[in-house]
Length: 356
Image 1 (cartoon, rainbow, N blue to C red):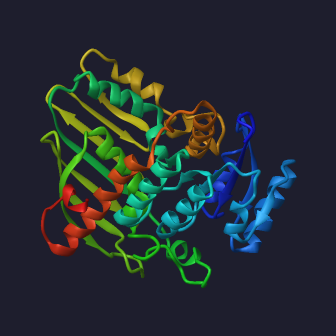
Image 2: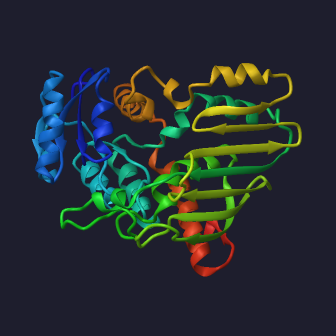
């Protein structure tokens, strides 16, 4: 392996197309190959790359791609319920991996990812790009400095919309839709869309102790839910709320509010909307982060966070350090999501420790 020119590949060209775009300005590495079972996707993406002067190998056979000695690292961007299988295959082949969110839809399979990762000695990371919203570092700073006083509540709400075509349009090899299924998507509005916010919630608030939840299907023909609402008890004693939906017919938002005895913070989609922090200027903070998540980098693809995660993994390989988010940390968000489903199913408070 040439540590000055890491060979990168992408498996799955749905959300994986963003991973491909995220390699556009990759330093210390290059995109070598793409893989998808659908030849039309392969041809479309390879043609787009060729138009930009980038030539890549195309594969429909993942095992064959993993035998390519030019490939050092792989983005796993297949349906969520396939993440463990594909990540483990790559790690056993000696490839470093970046796994799309969620790490998988099963705690047991996610824990197998962790076991193989630790045994293999490769670098492994997971995508949670909302942590890269520029204002999140500021919020972490304020919380660490105790400027909000005793944090007693947090509200985390994902009010999005997805059409029926969105669910029907994503299919596996058999031609069956995978979004909105328990087997391949692992859930609906919370596992697919809201998992980012569930991760931010547990990360910012210092961990979740328990959830008491309800779920419902309001406006889609799917197996899983398109609405969840949970009372959340945090390890620090705070109590809050986690909401997710893909039914919102109004303006979409990812609304986060954190309340303390001395101040409060609110943001929406990476933009600060309220900053009541002792000794700090609210208008200045709102203006500083007015462009929200787009400020991550100048590159539009990078603004989604995929470019950051890919660059971070490549740098971790070259520098022999830990990536930004490792598989064992990605398990935390998965356990919160699965606890919500378990609580709704069983009609009771579920403690996160039950998900171990």
